[in-house]
Length: 123
Image (cartoon, rainbow, N blue to C red; front, side):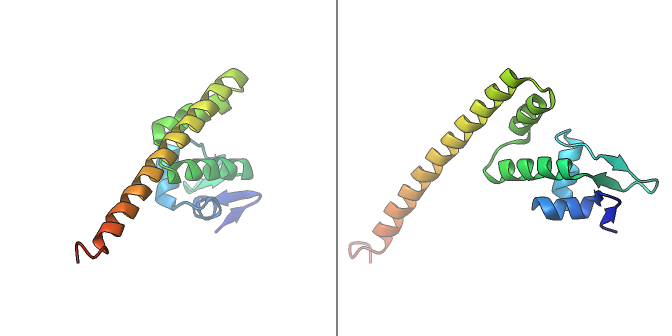
């Protein structure tokens, strides 16, 4: 079963969001996303808006954001508070900038180390 009416099962929602079923269960347990319905058999069901939220969360975790950081963002979005959403957006942008800087530094270190490893002085 992948669809019930216009709602998707947990597995299908996870697949469409690029996440695993375990990740989606973690996001649900953390309050980052709520299933739109639950069947009498206990299956979680998600609508397209929930899948869009899952995509946002999955993207955020892929760039290294923590559940708590993502929680601030989704709570601001859920509250329909433009000011809070803007603060959260700026916070996310700053976190992304920090991670990008750390990745550039790591790249430079790797280039330096690999360059030394292949130089005649170390061979």
